[in-house]
Amino acid sequence: QVQLVESGGGLVQPGGSLRLSCAASGRTFSTYNMGWFRQVPGKEREFVAATSRSGGTTSYADSVKGRFTISRDNAKSTVYLQMNSLKPDDTAVYYCAAQRLFILTERPSEYDNWGQGTQVTVSS
Image 1: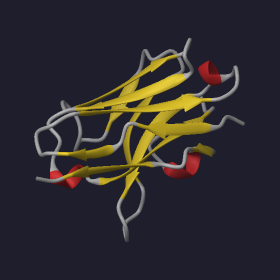
Image 2: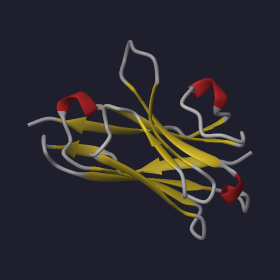
Image 3: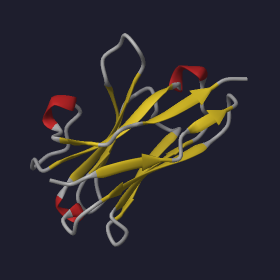
Image 4: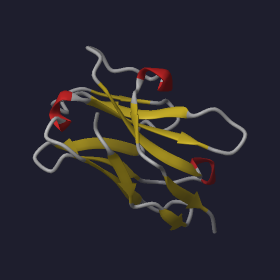
């Protein structure tokens, strides 16, 4: 098991940027694939981005491609989500998650460690 704590959320104007961080406890962070998801009230949790154990492979939802970048620093046991050109539709609670499958996945059910979430609000 790994404990995850997100930070970096907040209120930003459309077109602005935010960087989310997710710090993991324990010494096994590099054995997990990491993902970012988001959820708005009344809707299912949706995939945003994922990165492999080494950071060498990444995957993005079509809605964020070219605007968001996922990265990780295994020495710091932290995964990041750089969000640029933010839109009001990006408003949600953002969660990081970890899984140990052999492939990157986009289904929330395949992640078995979750953080508590951080609110991102994009509004003028």
